[in-house]
Length: 362
Image 1: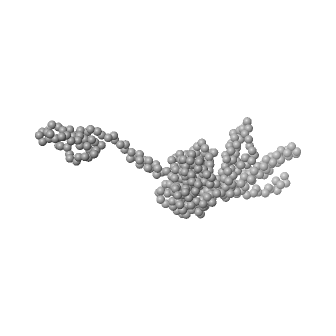
Image 2 (image 1 turned 180 degrees about the vertical axis):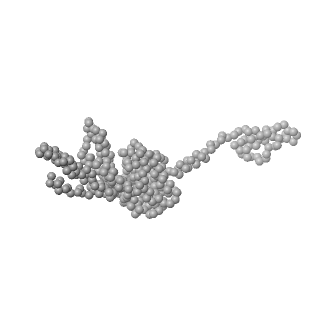
Image 3 (image 1 turned 90 degrees about the horizontal axis):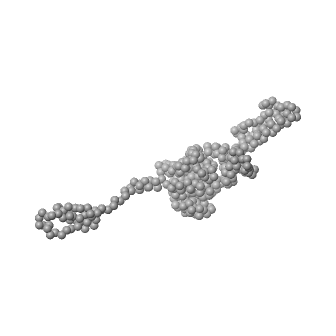
């Protein structure tokens, strides 16, 4: 702002000779009379220029508009694991669980609600179910969804996909959005980095409107920014692949755990891999493993195939042992290919075909 003082020049007439000097202060606007025409104005002071922060304010508003308010239902190890990533990217996180995690939540800067009604009244953008597979339906039915915004996005992170998808479609009104996801990693396998770890998702039901599409994409963008390999596929496709990979992995890990494997001074790389497998699977609850079996219709077939593969391998071993004994006793071995050995299992997991008559006679 300006403070102006007229500087009186030598008058050209006697009219202004005895006129007192008048200070015109622009700041206070005390006088509206303009200075005499023969007076020169001198700048006496100027205020410091204020920072022009319009662009920064707009940028900040845009950044805040891209942030989500995510409510995590089930704040156990996996829920806390995901919450830390959400916080790293500036999203706000709410939490609810049967167990009181208020102290842990407070240390992370998360609002913990013991009453689900109080949580739903916060009107989160996303409801993220991080419960066990077997408790998903009762937990979902217990939520006061009438207190949520009508277009709230529901997301799950279960290890099976068709089961939660069907529960969501059955329980939730049509005005809620549904996104089924599965991070193919956990607190152990993803504790160093999520880079190149697969993240599977299926946009089961996303309502019309740019804001609803954008919200789902912003949630998925969290995992993409962490370096995940994003894989979009249907829930049915996921369960088919997962039964042949994740369920078998967990099964083998738990079988090896029953053997009480111990490290040795001469561990090979392969043996170290087995020990790591046992460690990773043992860190997960049995409820998770049971859920992989119970709620994936493809798991039973894989379990039968595993049993058949083990029996086939035993027969192959004992078959070779039988050849050695025959050679020692009789000096004769069946011609190559005469003994029937199943090298690969049928895809339909049916029982092995009955042996031929020649094999029985031998």
